[in-house]
Length: 158
Picture 1 (cartoon, rainbow, N blue to C red):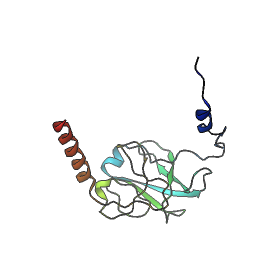
Picture 2 (spheres, helix red, strand yellow; picture 1 turned 60 degrees about the vertical axis):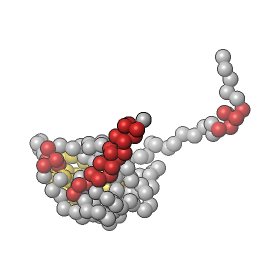
Picture 3 (tube, rainbow, N blue to C red; picture 1 turned 45 degrees about the horizontal axis):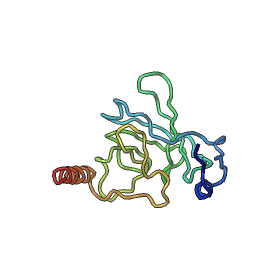
């Protein structure tokens, strides 16, 4: 049997357990459905709350369920300028304003974005809690094409 040497023990740090009992829940977009892919859905910000263990506030947003007679409650990362009672629109045809959720192809160059999805439908993984939110610098299709082109060139060279 091996042994953990002193240098490895020093790097392990102390015993730490994060205090997760009072957390409000995971902050993420609503799941992608037909209404959001082809039009938009309207929700209302019911509350802006503090989540311990997180640097940004959360917004409780209530949507009407598109098929059933009930409400869906989601927790979004609150963008700067969101307030209680604000209408939030999610979908392809939503207008560009603070708090709305729309695909990157619908956002002009230079716009400030937060909570960006890596894959379609993963409910937001990038730029969630940054003090200086990132700006969209180029159309994402161009970035994807340049990455794909460089990957193909590397495969052909090697």
